Image 1: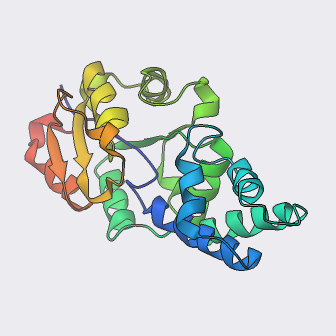
Image 2: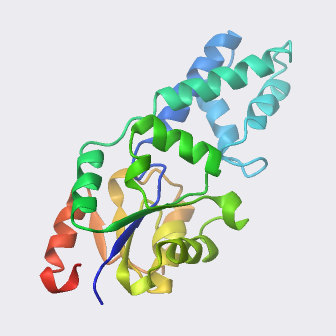
Image 3: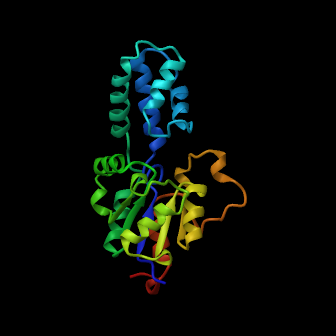
Length: 229
């Protein structure tokens, strides 16, 4: 079956989101005048509120007896603005996306971020208009590795699994579920900053592993003229 589209994970596949969050945590701690950025970042890694929820900052302040709590609202502002400001595309991402679009491929995103946050990031990076489809967790009520976000994305693009390449940095949340649905998979090893739990043994291996975003172009070309639009 011909490849007609490529779906990407967003955070840490298109840009280093962990680094942007770490910088934001550092600036929050600097504003508070006490604490440890690594410890604050660790609060976001817990499952209590989720990786995006600023309530993690409140918990950090309470647990470390950082007063006054009135500073919390200012901390949220600092965290959100600095995080967005420091999101930077990996090398050759925009150029590669533009080239893929010129080839006639439909481009989409499946992310666990909210649609509001996802659109802000894509707009900030100047790549939102290159995307035919955006699937965020509030659109399906589920997060990866549930199959629903992937199925939703395919429907919005009007494509079947065999017509799509999925590119993501998580073996457990990106590669395994998309491959199980029948998509061709590309593991973005360059962006994998996940925990060991995301690299459990016995997981389906990706069809391709890429160490640079631009390698996707080579993948598409290797499929041959008869497998592309």
